[in-house]
Amino acid sequence: MNKLTKFDPFEEMRALQRQFFGDNWGGSLADVANIAPATDVYTHDDKEMVVEAHLPNFEEKDVDVNIDNGALVISAEKREKEEDKKKKYVVRESTSSFYKRILLPEHADDDKVDAHLENGVLTVTVPFKELPKPKKINIKKKR
Image (tube, rainbow, N blue to C red; front, side):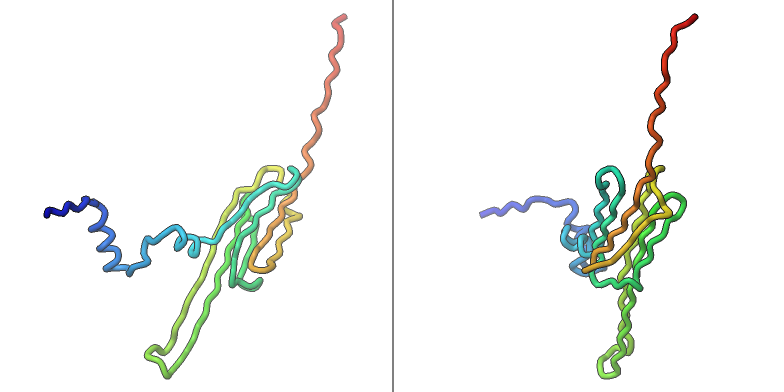
């Protein structure tokens, strides 16, 4: 009995990736979520912008929040170093990092930005300056 196999033009490329980078390279969407933490950006009552960056395992000392050229910049880096003479390796290091740049609206009040980290979630609140009210122009009759 003849057995037909469906041709997959990308299978050879995936096999090469597995050979060079291991089985998890280019994995599922769940693997990508572990690499790139979720970031939510929304407005609250049109009075402020809120950014929530999910940064599990990061502490306050690992996180930097800056305003740079009209953008909110969030960066985090955590380095861990372990030395164990009994194992085959002498030093084992790992690094986790995060970087996000979010353009702020023109009416953002960057002097009053507030940030706090709680339970692995960094919350940055950017209040908006009050926009000037439209000025009513009275229409007069021509003399």
